[in-house]
Image 1 (cartoon, rainbow, N blue to C red):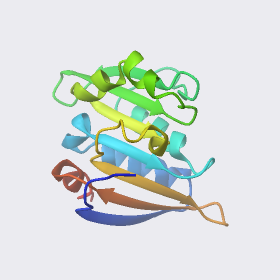
Image 2 (image 1 turned 60 degrees about the vertical axis):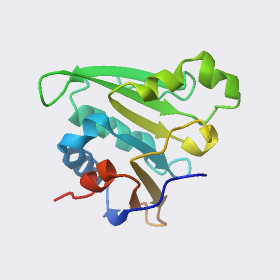
Image 3 (image 1 turned 45 degrees about the vertical axis):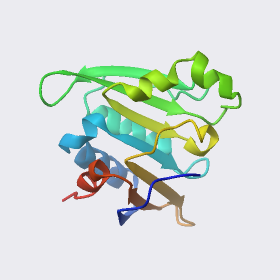
Image 4 (image 1 turned 90 degrees about the vertical axis):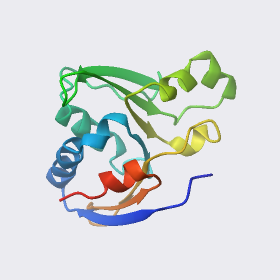
Length: 164
């Protein structure tokens, strides 16, 4: 996987889902989240989609939040912190196998537009994905807790990692 250099890292421990939800709320409150590209890495069951659901709720998404495992992308639009519309694209590249789908589905255009892009299983869509601002690596521990390793790859990512 070709990522830009890692500018900063941070490690967190989630003892339970409430800690995941709290982290999502904290991240949602960061001004730079509205134009960030986040990649989520981890095995099946690590909590990638759970984290995305908590983040989307914290950003104001209402109604059912579906996993885009079969559709590859689910779009959302909410009112951002400045009162302007915020476009969010949640990608799940787990079943992504055909590079032509990248162009045919217009994913390049989605990533080029302002808004938040969340990508699960990003390694399956490289080298088409633009570099992330932050990559989140979630590891499931034997006691069902999660270890989170955050890597900032851009100035936006660095600002996002300055969490309280």
